[in-house]
Length: 210
Image (cartoon, rainbow, N blue to C red; front, top):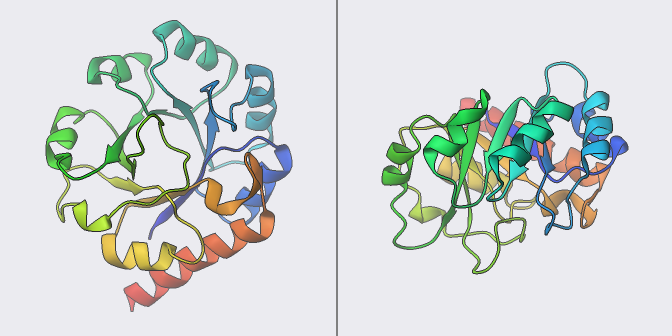
């Protein structure tokens, strides 16, 4: 069964729409250059709205250790997601499971990345766009992903209801991660797009399990 993460949540109604449609995880962005950035106060409100059994993920880009600890003091994150150049030792120091995002392009050795971040819960694979750290809505060549990665793989980058079934069929990821593909505007999710995306994931899983 392919898990689904809806990232870049900024509104309580989007928390509720994602959870109601069966999202497994929700992502909050603690990177102030992102249009989906949330303040600590807003993040705490969003966290309070999350129903049971939905994982709350906090996304960071090259933060200081103090920044991460301050977020954890105020927001009950279940998992940390690091999108910058953080070292494995940095990622592992906070007493929370973590995901390491890797921006994929030709020449990036994903097996080596998985070995380097072997303490991670999984690798999140996103498109490499120079000067950015994700959230671009761009996809990458899924053929660059090796068949046997030693860590669970979360596929991200340019996914939407129109291509997620093909992505799952081709890549067989542990989970898919979507942000701009279910938005009406940056940071504003569209409940109908969330529903359509998650339905596509469930339908292709059913097909592949037959």
